[in-house]
Image 1 (cartoon, helix red, strand yellow):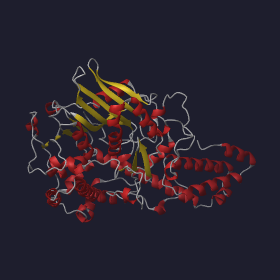
Image 2 (tube, helix red, strand yellow; image 1 turned 135 degrees about the vertical axis):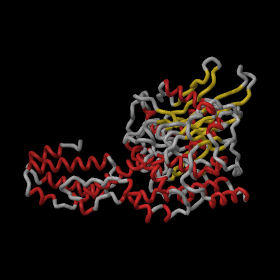
Image 3 (cartoon, helix red, strand yellow; image 1 turned 90 degrees about the horizontal axis):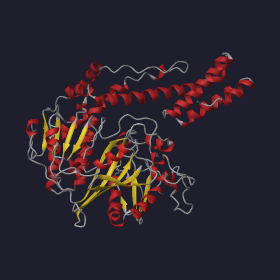
Image 4 (cartoon, helix red, strand yellow; image 1 turned 30 degrees about the vertical axis):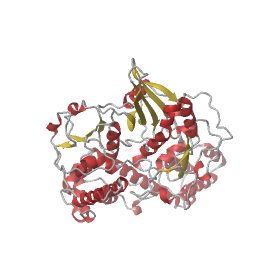
Length: 576
Protein backbone atom coordinates (compact mmCIF):
# COMPACT_ATOMS: atom_id res chain seq x y z
CA UNK A 1 0.00 0.00 0.00
CA UNK A 2 1.38 3.40 -0.91
CA UNK A 3 0.50 7.03 -0.65
CA UNK A 4 2.42 9.12 -3.10
CA UNK A 5 2.45 12.20 -5.31
CA UNK A 6 4.85 14.73 -6.84
CA UNK A 7 3.42 17.46 -4.67
CA UNK A 8 3.05 15.35 -1.57
CA UNK A 9 -0.16 14.23 0.03
CA UNK A 10 -2.08 17.42 -0.45
CA UNK A 11 -3.11 19.99 -2.98
CA UNK A 12 -0.67 20.63 -5.77
CA UNK A 13 -1.20 22.95 -8.72
CA UNK A 14 -4.78 24.17 -8.85
CA UNK A 15 -6.97 24.85 -11.83
CA UNK A 16 -10.15 26.96 -11.61
CA UNK A 17 -12.13 23.95 -12.83
CA UNK A 18 -12.83 21.22 -10.31
CA UNK A 19 -14.28 17.77 -10.68
CA UNK A 20 -16.60 17.56 -7.72
CA UNK A 21 -19.38 16.35 -10.01
CA UNK A 22 -17.37 13.95 -12.15
CA UNK A 23 -19.85 11.21 -11.27
CA UNK A 24 -22.39 13.01 -13.45
CA UNK A 25 -20.43 12.01 -16.55
CA UNK A 26 -22.25 9.79 -19.01
CA UNK A 27 -25.35 9.33 -16.88
CA UNK A 28 -28.51 8.02 -18.52
CA UNK A 29 -31.57 10.32 -18.58
CA UNK A 30 -31.36 11.18 -14.87
CA UNK A 31 -34.53 11.51 -12.87
CA UNK A 32 -35.33 14.46 -10.63
CA UNK A 33 -35.09 14.06 -6.88
CA UNK A 34 -38.30 12.79 -5.41
CA UNK A 35 -40.53 15.62 -4.33
CA UNK A 36 -41.31 13.80 -1.13
CA UNK A 37 -37.71 13.85 0.06
CA UNK A 38 -36.98 15.15 3.50
CA UNK A 39 -36.65 18.97 3.48
CA UNK A 40 -33.23 20.35 4.30
CA UNK A 41 -32.52 22.92 6.92
CA UNK A 42 -32.49 26.38 5.32
CA UNK A 43 -28.97 27.02 6.60
CA UNK A 44 -27.76 23.89 4.84
CA UNK A 45 -29.52 24.22 1.49
CA UNK A 46 -26.75 26.29 -0.11
CA UNK A 47 -27.70 26.00 -3.72
CA UNK A 48 -29.10 22.48 -3.72
CA UNK A 49 -32.33 23.73 -5.25
CA UNK A 50 -35.39 21.52 -5.45
CA UNK A 51 -34.87 20.93 -9.19
CA UNK A 52 -31.49 19.25 -8.68
CA UNK A 53 -30.83 16.14 -10.75
CA UNK A 54 -30.57 12.78 -9.04
CA UNK A 55 -27.00 11.96 -7.88
CA UNK A 56 -25.82 15.58 -8.05
CA UNK A 57 -25.92 15.70 -4.25
CA UNK A 58 -23.93 12.45 -4.06
CA UNK A 59 -21.41 13.77 -6.59
CA UNK A 60 -20.66 16.79 -4.40
CA UNK A 61 -19.17 14.40 -1.83
CA UNK A 62 -18.18 11.21 -3.65
CA UNK A 63 -17.22 10.09 -7.13
CA UNK A 64 -18.36 6.54 -6.49
CA UNK A 65 -18.28 3.61 -4.07
CA UNK A 66 -16.40 0.42 -4.99
CA UNK A 67 -16.39 -3.07 -3.58
CA UNK A 68 -13.11 -4.91 -4.16
CA UNK A 69 -12.92 -8.66 -3.59
CA UNK A 70 -10.32 -11.37 -4.10
CA UNK A 71 -10.67 -13.88 -6.92
CA UNK A 72 -8.44 -16.97 -6.83
CA UNK A 73 -7.83 -16.76 -10.59
CA UNK A 74 -7.86 -13.00 -11.17
CA UNK A 75 -6.60 -11.69 -7.84
CA UNK A 76 -8.12 -8.43 -6.63
CA UNK A 77 -11.12 -7.34 -8.71
CA UNK A 78 -13.71 -4.56 -8.57
CA UNK A 79 -16.99 -6.39 -7.96
CA UNK A 80 -19.33 -3.41 -7.62
CA UNK A 81 -19.28 0.26 -8.65
CA UNK A 82 -22.10 2.40 -7.33
CA UNK A 83 -23.87 4.43 -8.64
CA UNK A 84 -23.76 2.29 -11.77
CA UNK A 85 -23.35 5.29 -14.11
CA UNK A 86 -20.05 6.26 -12.41
CA UNK A 87 -17.07 6.16 -14.76
CA UNK A 88 -13.67 4.69 -13.90
CA UNK A 89 -11.00 3.89 -16.48
CA UNK A 90 -9.35 0.47 -16.51
CA UNK A 91 -6.17 2.02 -15.11
CA UNK A 92 -8.11 3.66 -12.26
CA UNK A 93 -9.82 0.35 -11.46
CA UNK A 94 -6.45 -1.40 -11.40
CA UNK A 95 -5.04 1.22 -9.01
CA UNK A 96 -8.05 0.88 -6.73
CA UNK A 97 -7.73 -2.92 -6.72
CA UNK A 98 -4.06 -2.96 -5.72
CA UNK A 99 -4.18 -0.06 -3.28
CA UNK A 100 -7.32 -1.14 -1.40
CA UNK A 101 -5.87 -4.49 -0.28
CA UNK A 102 -3.20 -4.47 2.46
CA UNK A 103 0.25 -5.46 1.22
CA UNK A 104 2.23 -6.50 4.28
CA UNK A 105 3.20 -9.52 6.37
CA UNK A 106 1.18 -8.43 9.40
CA UNK A 107 -1.86 -10.52 8.53
CA UNK A 108 -4.42 -7.73 9.10
CA UNK A 109 -7.03 -10.14 10.48
CA UNK A 110 -10.30 -8.47 11.32
CA UNK A 111 -11.21 -4.97 10.15
CA UNK A 112 -8.65 -2.41 8.96
CA UNK A 113 -9.16 1.19 7.82
CA UNK A 114 -6.72 3.26 5.78
CA UNK A 115 -6.63 5.62 2.84
CA UNK A 116 -4.61 6.16 -0.32
CA UNK A 117 -4.35 8.69 -3.12
CA UNK A 118 -4.02 7.86 -6.80
CA UNK A 119 -3.61 9.81 -10.00
CA UNK A 120 -6.64 10.39 -12.15
CA UNK A 121 -6.29 9.02 -15.69
CA UNK A 122 -5.25 11.55 -18.31
CA UNK A 123 -7.93 12.48 -20.83
CA UNK A 124 -10.79 12.24 -18.34
CA UNK A 125 -13.44 14.79 -19.20
CA UNK A 126 -13.59 17.59 -16.66
CA UNK A 127 -17.02 18.58 -15.36
CA UNK A 128 -17.72 22.16 -14.41
CA UNK A 129 -19.64 22.80 -11.23
CA UNK A 130 -19.46 26.49 -10.46
CA UNK A 131 -21.09 26.21 -7.06
CA UNK A 132 -18.60 23.68 -5.73
CA UNK A 133 -15.75 25.58 -7.35
CA UNK A 134 -16.85 28.57 -5.28
CA UNK A 135 -16.77 26.38 -2.15
CA UNK A 136 -13.22 25.29 -2.98
CA UNK A 137 -12.16 28.95 -3.04
CA UNK A 138 -13.20 29.35 0.61
CA UNK A 139 -11.29 26.29 1.85
CA UNK A 140 -7.88 26.40 3.56
CA UNK A 141 -5.14 25.35 1.15
CA UNK A 142 -4.67 21.91 2.72
CA UNK A 143 -8.32 20.99 2.02
CA UNK A 144 -8.55 22.19 -1.57
CA UNK A 145 -9.29 19.56 -4.19
CA UNK A 146 -6.53 18.54 -6.56
CA UNK A 147 -8.01 18.01 -10.06
CA UNK A 148 -5.35 15.41 -10.84
CA UNK A 149 -6.06 13.01 -7.96
CA UNK A 150 -8.68 10.87 -6.28
CA UNK A 151 -8.64 9.73 -2.64
CA UNK A 152 -9.61 6.21 -1.72
CA UNK A 153 -10.98 5.56 1.78
CA UNK A 154 -10.88 1.85 2.63
CA UNK A 155 -12.62 -0.44 5.08
CA UNK A 156 -10.97 -3.86 4.65
CA UNK A 157 -12.26 -7.03 6.27
CA UNK A 158 -10.30 -10.28 6.46
CA UNK A 159 -11.72 -13.16 8.50
CA UNK A 160 -11.30 -16.92 8.39
CA UNK A 161 -13.97 -18.72 6.36
CA UNK A 162 -13.59 -22.46 5.82
CA UNK A 163 -16.31 -22.45 3.15
CA UNK A 164 -14.04 -20.49 0.79
CA UNK A 165 -11.21 -22.17 -1.14
CA UNK A 166 -8.65 -19.72 0.12
CA UNK A 167 -9.85 -20.13 3.70
CA UNK A 168 -10.41 -16.40 4.19
CA UNK A 169 -13.09 -13.85 3.43
CA UNK A 170 -11.33 -10.78 2.02
CA UNK A 171 -13.17 -7.71 0.85
CA UNK A 172 -12.76 -3.91 0.82
CA UNK A 173 -15.43 -1.24 0.74
CA UNK A 174 -13.85 1.85 -0.83
CA UNK A 175 -15.16 5.41 -1.02
CA UNK A 176 -13.66 7.31 -3.98
CA UNK A 177 -13.70 11.10 -3.55
CA UNK A 178 -11.97 14.30 -4.62
CA UNK A 179 -12.24 15.56 -1.03
CA UNK A 180 -9.31 15.09 1.40
CA UNK A 181 -11.62 14.69 4.41
CA UNK A 182 -9.84 11.71 5.97
CA UNK A 183 -11.41 11.59 9.42
CA UNK A 184 -14.88 12.29 8.06
CA UNK A 185 -14.90 9.51 5.46
CA UNK A 186 -13.33 7.03 7.88
CA UNK A 187 -16.23 7.82 10.24
CA UNK A 188 -18.75 7.30 7.42
CA UNK A 189 -17.18 3.90 6.67
CA UNK A 190 -17.36 2.89 10.33
CA UNK A 191 -21.11 3.52 10.17
CA UNK A 192 -21.88 1.65 6.95
CA UNK A 193 -19.17 -0.96 6.25
CA UNK A 194 -19.89 -3.51 9.03
CA UNK A 195 -23.59 -3.56 8.08
CA UNK A 196 -22.75 -3.77 4.38
CA UNK A 197 -20.66 -6.92 4.87
CA UNK A 198 -23.74 -8.52 6.46
CA UNK A 199 -26.50 -7.17 4.17
CA UNK A 200 -24.69 -6.64 0.84
CA UNK A 201 -25.77 -4.41 -2.08
CA UNK A 202 -29.28 -3.26 -1.06
CA UNK A 203 -27.74 -1.73 2.06
CA UNK A 204 -25.05 0.01 -0.02
CA UNK A 205 -27.69 1.42 -2.37
CA UNK A 206 -29.67 2.78 0.58
CA UNK A 207 -26.53 4.40 2.05
CA UNK A 208 -25.72 6.08 -1.27
CA UNK A 209 -29.28 7.41 -1.48
CA UNK A 210 -28.76 8.98 1.96
CA UNK A 211 -25.57 10.68 0.75
CA UNK A 212 -27.43 12.00 -2.30
CA UNK A 213 -29.77 13.89 0.06
CA UNK A 214 -26.94 15.57 1.95
CA UNK A 215 -26.53 19.34 1.72
CA UNK A 216 -23.54 20.57 -0.28
CA UNK A 217 -20.12 20.57 1.50
CA UNK A 218 -20.11 24.31 2.22
CA UNK A 219 -17.11 25.55 4.23
CA UNK A 220 -18.05 27.23 7.50
CA UNK A 221 -21.60 25.84 7.69
CA UNK A 222 -23.09 23.52 10.28
CA UNK A 223 -23.94 20.34 8.37
CA UNK A 224 -26.24 17.59 9.62
CA UNK A 225 -25.62 14.48 7.53
CA UNK A 226 -27.90 11.46 8.02
CA UNK A 227 -26.49 8.07 7.06
CA UNK A 228 -28.40 4.83 7.73
CA UNK A 229 -30.12 5.97 10.92
CA UNK A 230 -27.17 7.97 12.26
CA UNK A 231 -26.87 11.76 12.01
CA UNK A 232 -23.36 13.20 11.81
CA UNK A 233 -22.72 16.82 12.71
CA UNK A 234 -19.72 18.39 11.00
CA UNK A 235 -18.23 21.71 10.03
CA UNK A 236 -15.78 22.06 7.14
CA UNK A 237 -13.08 24.66 7.97
CA UNK A 238 -12.69 27.88 6.00
CA UNK A 239 -9.56 29.80 5.05
CA UNK A 240 -10.73 32.50 7.50
CA UNK A 241 -10.67 30.25 10.59
CA UNK A 242 -8.04 30.90 13.21
CA UNK A 243 -5.36 28.19 12.83
CA UNK A 244 -5.34 25.52 15.51
CA UNK A 245 -8.95 26.04 16.63
CA UNK A 246 -12.00 23.78 16.44
CA UNK A 247 -15.27 25.54 15.62
CA UNK A 248 -17.70 22.65 16.17
CA UNK A 249 -18.30 23.41 19.86
CA UNK A 250 -19.51 26.91 18.99
CA UNK A 251 -22.30 25.70 16.72
CA UNK A 252 -25.26 25.48 19.08
CA UNK A 253 -26.18 26.69 22.51
CA UNK A 254 -28.61 23.82 23.16
CA UNK A 255 -28.18 20.07 22.99
CA UNK A 256 -29.00 18.31 19.71
CA UNK A 257 -31.15 15.31 20.62
CA UNK A 258 -31.03 13.89 17.07
CA UNK A 259 -27.24 14.04 16.66
CA UNK A 260 -25.51 10.67 16.91
CA UNK A 261 -21.94 11.63 15.99
CA UNK A 262 -20.24 15.01 16.39
CA UNK A 263 -16.98 15.32 14.49
CA UNK A 264 -14.58 18.01 15.82
CA UNK A 265 -12.54 17.69 12.60
CA UNK A 266 -13.08 16.42 9.06
CA UNK A 267 -9.44 15.85 8.18
CA UNK A 268 -7.06 15.60 11.14
CA UNK A 269 -5.43 12.37 12.31
CA UNK A 270 -4.14 11.50 15.79
CA UNK A 271 -0.86 13.39 15.48
CA UNK A 272 0.67 12.28 18.78
CA UNK A 273 -0.10 8.60 18.20
CA UNK A 274 1.49 8.76 14.74
CA UNK A 275 4.66 10.52 15.90
CA UNK A 276 5.05 8.62 19.15
CA UNK A 277 7.42 5.90 17.80
CA UNK A 278 9.81 8.59 16.46
CA UNK A 279 8.74 11.44 18.69
CA UNK A 280 12.20 12.59 19.71
CA UNK A 281 12.96 13.25 16.04
CA UNK A 282 9.68 15.04 15.27
CA UNK A 283 11.33 18.48 15.09
CA UNK A 284 13.80 17.10 12.54
CA UNK A 285 10.87 15.67 10.59
CA UNK A 286 9.30 19.14 10.62
CA UNK A 287 12.49 20.48 8.98
CA UNK A 288 12.45 17.74 6.35
CA UNK A 289 8.82 18.46 5.50
CA UNK A 290 9.47 22.21 5.44
CA UNK A 291 12.35 21.72 3.00
CA UNK A 292 10.36 19.38 0.75
CA UNK A 293 12.73 16.45 1.27
CA UNK A 294 11.57 13.02 -0.02
CA UNK A 295 10.48 10.63 2.73
CA UNK A 296 9.54 6.98 3.02
CA UNK A 297 7.36 5.74 5.88
CA UNK A 298 7.71 2.00 6.58
CA UNK A 299 5.05 0.54 8.83
CA UNK A 300 3.63 -2.90 9.66
CA UNK A 301 0.06 -2.05 8.61
CA UNK A 302 -1.64 0.21 6.03
CA UNK A 303 -3.54 2.16 8.67
CA UNK A 304 -0.32 3.12 10.50
CA UNK A 305 1.47 3.88 7.24
CA UNK A 306 -1.28 6.12 5.82
CA UNK A 307 -1.92 7.93 9.12
CA UNK A 308 1.77 8.74 9.55
CA UNK A 309 1.98 10.01 5.98
CA UNK A 310 -1.06 12.22 6.62
CA UNK A 311 0.46 13.49 9.87
CA UNK A 312 3.54 14.63 7.93
CA UNK A 313 1.29 16.56 5.51
CA UNK A 314 3.17 17.29 2.24
CA UNK A 315 6.82 16.84 1.37
CA UNK A 316 7.80 16.89 -2.32
CA UNK A 317 7.60 13.12 -2.53
CA UNK A 318 6.21 10.90 0.19
CA UNK A 319 5.71 7.15 0.16
CA UNK A 320 3.90 5.09 2.73
CA UNK A 321 4.68 1.37 2.43
CA UNK A 322 3.95 -1.82 4.37
CA UNK A 323 5.60 -4.55 2.28
CA UNK A 324 8.97 -5.65 3.79
CA UNK A 325 10.31 -5.84 0.23
CA UNK A 326 10.74 -2.06 0.31
CA UNK A 327 13.21 -2.26 3.19
CA UNK A 328 15.87 -3.17 0.63
CA UNK A 329 14.36 -1.63 -2.51
CA UNK A 330 14.20 1.88 -1.04
CA UNK A 331 17.58 1.96 0.71
CA UNK A 332 18.70 4.70 -1.66
CA UNK A 333 16.05 7.11 -0.35
CA UNK A 334 17.68 9.86 1.73
CA UNK A 335 15.19 9.83 4.63
CA UNK A 336 13.27 6.81 5.93
CA UNK A 337 10.90 6.65 8.89
CA UNK A 338 10.42 3.17 10.29
CA UNK A 339 7.61 2.70 12.79
CA UNK A 340 6.39 -0.31 14.72
CA UNK A 341 2.89 -1.11 15.92
CA UNK A 342 1.14 2.02 17.14
CA UNK A 343 -0.18 1.69 20.67
CA UNK A 344 -3.45 3.41 21.71
CA UNK A 345 -1.74 5.35 24.51
CA UNK A 346 1.91 5.03 23.55
CA UNK A 347 5.14 5.67 25.35
CA UNK A 348 7.80 8.05 24.15
CA UNK A 349 10.83 5.93 23.23
CA UNK A 350 14.10 6.55 25.04
CA UNK A 351 16.24 5.89 21.95
CA UNK A 352 17.31 9.31 20.64
CA UNK A 353 20.02 8.42 18.15
CA UNK A 354 19.34 8.95 14.44
CA UNK A 355 20.22 5.75 12.58
CA UNK A 356 22.39 5.44 9.49
CA UNK A 357 20.78 4.39 6.22
CA UNK A 358 23.18 1.48 5.77
CA UNK A 359 21.63 -0.13 8.86
CA UNK A 360 18.27 -0.54 7.09
CA UNK A 361 19.25 -3.62 5.09
CA UNK A 362 17.49 -6.21 7.20
CA UNK A 363 13.75 -6.83 7.48
CA UNK A 364 13.85 -6.65 11.28
CA UNK A 365 15.31 -3.15 11.46
CA UNK A 366 14.27 -1.34 14.59
CA UNK A 367 11.84 1.62 14.49
CA UNK A 368 13.49 5.00 14.07
CA UNK A 369 14.57 7.63 11.57
CA UNK A 370 17.23 6.53 9.07
CA UNK A 371 18.96 9.55 7.53
CA UNK A 372 22.25 11.40 7.23
CA UNK A 373 20.44 14.76 7.55
CA UNK A 374 21.73 17.06 10.31
CA UNK A 375 19.03 19.39 11.72
CA UNK A 376 19.63 23.13 11.56
CA UNK A 377 17.78 23.82 14.82
CA UNK A 378 18.46 22.57 18.33
CA UNK A 379 15.94 20.18 19.80
CA UNK A 380 13.26 21.83 21.92
CA UNK A 381 13.52 20.02 25.26
CA UNK A 382 10.51 21.83 26.76
CA UNK A 383 7.94 20.30 24.42
CA UNK A 384 9.48 16.86 24.99
CA UNK A 385 9.16 17.23 28.76
CA UNK A 386 5.60 18.53 28.43
CA UNK A 387 4.47 15.52 26.41
CA UNK A 388 6.45 13.03 28.51
CA UNK A 389 4.64 14.40 31.55
CA UNK A 390 1.37 13.93 29.68
CA UNK A 391 2.18 10.25 29.09
CA UNK A 392 3.00 9.78 32.79
CA UNK A 393 -0.29 11.45 33.77
CA UNK A 394 -2.20 9.37 31.21
CA UNK A 395 -3.30 12.48 29.33
CA UNK A 396 -5.59 11.45 26.41
CA UNK A 397 -3.90 11.10 23.06
CA UNK A 398 -6.30 13.71 21.60
CA UNK A 399 -5.06 16.27 24.14
CA UNK A 400 -1.44 15.36 23.41
CA UNK A 401 -2.15 15.85 19.70
CA UNK A 402 -3.58 19.31 20.35
CA UNK A 403 -0.39 20.30 22.21
CA UNK A 404 1.84 18.88 19.47
CA UNK A 405 -0.19 20.44 16.65
CA UNK A 406 -0.08 23.85 18.37
CA UNK A 407 3.67 23.50 18.82
CA UNK A 408 4.24 22.81 15.13
CA UNK A 409 1.87 25.62 14.18
CA UNK A 410 3.78 28.14 16.32
CA UNK A 411 7.12 26.85 15.02
CA UNK A 412 5.92 27.21 11.42
CA UNK A 413 4.53 30.67 12.09
CA UNK A 414 7.84 31.77 13.65
CA UNK A 415 9.59 30.61 10.50
CA UNK A 416 7.14 32.05 7.99
CA UNK A 417 6.38 35.48 9.57
CA UNK A 418 9.75 37.03 8.53
CA UNK A 419 9.15 35.80 4.98
CA UNK A 420 5.60 37.18 4.97
CA UNK A 421 6.87 40.53 6.29
CA UNK A 422 9.53 40.78 3.58
CA UNK A 423 7.19 39.71 0.77
CA UNK A 424 4.66 42.33 1.89
CA UNK A 425 7.37 44.96 1.41
CA UNK A 426 7.56 43.99 -2.28
CA UNK A 427 4.06 45.40 -2.80
CA UNK A 428 3.97 48.84 -4.54
CA UNK A 429 2.53 51.73 -2.56
CA UNK A 430 -1.18 52.32 -3.14
CA UNK A 431 -0.52 55.92 -4.22
CA UNK A 432 1.45 54.57 -7.19
CA UNK A 433 -1.68 52.95 -8.63
CA UNK A 434 -3.16 55.04 -11.46
CA UNK A 435 -6.57 54.20 -13.00
CA UNK A 436 -5.24 55.14 -16.46
CA UNK A 437 -2.14 52.95 -16.36
CA UNK A 438 -1.64 49.23 -15.96
CA UNK A 439 -1.25 48.10 -12.34
CA UNK A 440 2.39 48.42 -11.12
CA UNK A 441 4.56 45.29 -10.84
CA UNK A 442 5.77 43.67 -7.64
CA UNK A 443 9.40 44.18 -6.70
CA UNK A 444 11.70 41.21 -7.19
CA UNK A 445 12.38 38.82 -4.30
CA UNK A 446 16.10 39.19 -3.49
CA UNK A 447 17.38 36.40 -1.18
CA UNK A 448 20.29 38.39 0.24
CA UNK A 449 18.09 41.41 0.90
CA UNK A 450 15.72 39.13 2.80
CA UNK A 451 18.58 37.61 4.81
CA UNK A 452 19.60 41.05 6.03
CA UNK A 453 16.12 41.55 7.54
CA UNK A 454 16.53 38.51 9.81
CA UNK A 455 18.99 40.18 12.17
CA UNK A 456 16.32 42.49 13.60
CA UNK A 457 13.04 40.84 12.59
CA UNK A 458 13.91 37.15 12.44
CA UNK A 459 12.26 34.14 14.15
CA UNK A 460 14.11 34.89 17.39
CA UNK A 461 11.34 37.41 18.14
CA UNK A 462 8.71 34.67 18.47
CA UNK A 463 10.56 31.37 19.02
CA UNK A 464 12.69 30.14 21.93
CA UNK A 465 14.48 27.60 19.73
CA UNK A 466 18.15 28.25 19.03
CA UNK A 467 20.18 27.03 16.07
CA UNK A 468 21.17 27.88 12.51
CA UNK A 469 18.01 29.66 11.37
CA UNK A 470 19.95 31.40 8.57
CA UNK A 471 21.07 28.04 7.17
CA UNK A 472 17.51 26.73 7.35
CA UNK A 473 16.21 29.76 5.41
CA UNK A 474 18.93 29.41 2.74
CA UNK A 475 18.01 25.75 2.27
CA UNK A 476 14.29 26.59 2.15
CA UNK A 477 14.76 29.27 -0.52
CA UNK A 478 16.30 26.62 -2.79
CA UNK A 479 13.54 24.08 -2.15
CA UNK A 480 10.41 23.37 -4.23
CA UNK A 481 8.28 24.32 -1.23
CA UNK A 482 9.52 27.91 -1.43
CA UNK A 483 8.68 28.04 -5.14
CA UNK A 484 5.14 26.88 -4.45
CA UNK A 485 4.69 29.19 -1.47
CA UNK A 486 6.05 32.28 -3.24
CA UNK A 487 4.04 31.54 -6.40
CA UNK A 488 0.88 31.52 -4.28
CA UNK A 489 1.80 34.74 -2.47
CA UNK A 490 2.75 36.48 -5.72
CA UNK A 491 -0.60 35.52 -7.24
CA UNK A 492 -2.47 36.82 -4.18
CA UNK A 493 -0.62 40.16 -4.27
CA UNK A 494 -1.06 40.53 -8.02
CA UNK A 495 -4.78 39.97 -7.57
CA UNK A 496 -4.79 42.56 -4.80
CA UNK A 497 -3.14 45.07 -7.16
CA UNK A 498 -5.78 44.32 -9.79
CA UNK A 499 -8.50 44.85 -7.18
CA UNK A 500 -6.98 48.18 -6.07
CA UNK A 501 -6.73 49.23 -9.72
CA UNK A 502 -10.42 48.44 -10.15
CA UNK A 503 -11.29 50.51 -7.08
CA UNK A 504 -9.23 53.41 -8.43
CA UNK A 505 -11.20 53.26 -11.69
CA UNK A 506 -14.50 53.35 -9.79
CA UNK A 507 -13.48 56.52 -7.96
CA UNK A 508 -12.89 58.38 -11.24
CA UNK A 509 -15.50 60.62 -12.89
CA UNK A 510 -15.73 58.54 -16.06
CA UNK A 511 -18.51 60.65 -17.58
CA UNK A 512 -16.23 63.68 -17.41
CA UNK A 513 -13.45 61.60 -18.97
CA UNK A 514 -15.53 60.59 -22.03
CA UNK A 515 -16.39 64.25 -22.73
CA UNK A 516 -12.70 64.81 -23.46
CA UNK A 517 -12.19 61.72 -25.61
CA UNK A 518 -13.43 60.35 -28.91
CA UNK A 519 -16.20 57.79 -29.39
CA UNK A 520 -13.61 55.20 -30.40
CA UNK A 521 -11.72 55.74 -27.14
CA UNK A 522 -14.99 55.61 -25.20
CA UNK A 523 -16.03 52.31 -26.80
CA UNK A 524 -12.57 50.94 -26.03
CA UNK A 525 -12.98 51.99 -22.40
CA UNK A 526 -16.35 50.23 -22.14
CA UNK A 527 -14.89 47.00 -23.53
CA UNK A 528 -11.94 47.19 -21.14
CA UNK A 529 -14.21 47.81 -18.16
CA UNK A 530 -16.36 44.82 -19.14
CA UNK A 531 -13.24 42.68 -19.35
CA UNK A 532 -12.23 43.94 -15.89
CA UNK A 533 -15.57 42.73 -14.52
CA UNK A 534 -15.10 39.38 -16.20
CA UNK A 535 -11.56 39.06 -14.82
CA UNK A 536 -12.72 39.94 -11.29
CA UNK A 537 -15.34 37.20 -11.45
CA UNK A 538 -13.15 34.59 -13.15
CA UNK A 539 -10.11 35.05 -10.90
CA UNK A 540 -12.10 35.71 -7.72
CA UNK A 541 -10.34 39.02 -7.18
CA UNK A 542 -10.67 40.40 -3.63
CA UNK A 543 -13.03 43.17 -4.73
CA UNK A 544 -15.82 44.53 -2.54
CA UNK A 545 -19.35 43.85 -3.89
CA UNK A 546 -20.21 47.57 -3.91
CA UNK A 547 -17.12 48.22 -6.07
CA UNK A 548 -18.39 45.74 -8.67
CA UNK A 549 -21.84 47.30 -8.59
CA UNK A 550 -20.38 50.79 -8.93
CA UNK A 551 -18.37 49.68 -11.97
CA UNK A 552 -21.50 48.23 -13.62
CA UNK A 553 -23.27 51.53 -13.00
CA UNK A 554 -20.37 53.40 -14.61
CA UNK A 555 -20.52 51.13 -17.65
CA UNK A 556 -24.28 51.62 -18.06
CA UNK A 557 -23.96 55.42 -17.70
CA UNK A 558 -21.18 55.58 -20.32
CA UNK A 559 -23.17 53.47 -22.78
CA UNK A 560 -26.25 55.68 -22.36
CA UNK A 561 -24.12 58.72 -23.14
CA UNK A 562 -23.23 57.30 -26.56
CA UNK A 563 -25.31 57.49 -29.78
CA UNK A 564 -28.17 54.98 -30.02
CA UNK A 565 -26.51 52.80 -32.67
CA UNK A 566 -23.46 52.34 -30.47
CA UNK A 567 -25.68 51.75 -27.41
CA UNK A 568 -27.36 48.82 -29.12
CA UNK A 569 -24.05 47.26 -30.10
CA UNK A 570 -22.44 47.66 -26.66
CA UNK A 571 -25.51 46.47 -24.76
CA UNK A 572 -25.47 43.27 -26.86
CA UNK A 573 -21.75 42.82 -26.37
CA UNK A 574 -21.39 40.29 -23.59
CA UNK A 575 -18.41 40.01 -21.33
CA UNK A 576 -16.67 37.31 -23.33
